[in-house]
Amino acid sequence: MLLRGACHCRNLSFTLAWAPDPAEIVARVCGCSFCTKHGGVWTACPTGELRVAVEDPAQVSLYAFATRTATFQVCARCGVVPLVTSEIAGRIYAVVSATVLDVDPALVRRVPASFDDESLDDRLARRARGWIANVEGASVVR
Image 1 (cartoon, rainbow, N blue to C red):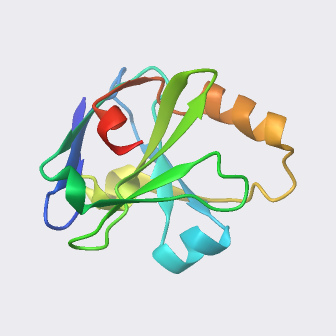
Image 2: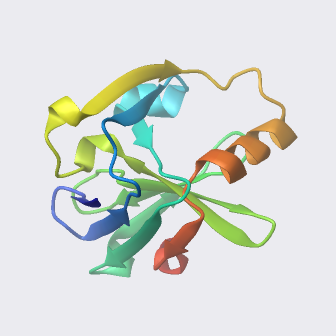
């Protein structure tokens, strides 16, 4: 299944080839302070292929906090955060916002997630296992 998503003004957009076709898209409702304030609901297909397109790189703001191991890609024009990247051992991994997907909302199942008690090594290992590993175009917005 080819999923499409974008920020509100479409400056930051992506396609995510999700295979095999999902019966549902599990989306993690992150409980960290940033995601709580921004309504962060993230999903990933570890075997998928993510292609990121940026209309105007100057209109992308990068934000990292706490461990500084994840970079939130914020559209400076419309304020939406369509994806997050993490560089692990020289490779870019990503999750996408389920709220920006152009899909039937009934396909998305939200589940609460808290990563407060993870060590840094555990966090990076979880991302390497569960985030999208095949990412193109994110080098513009790392």
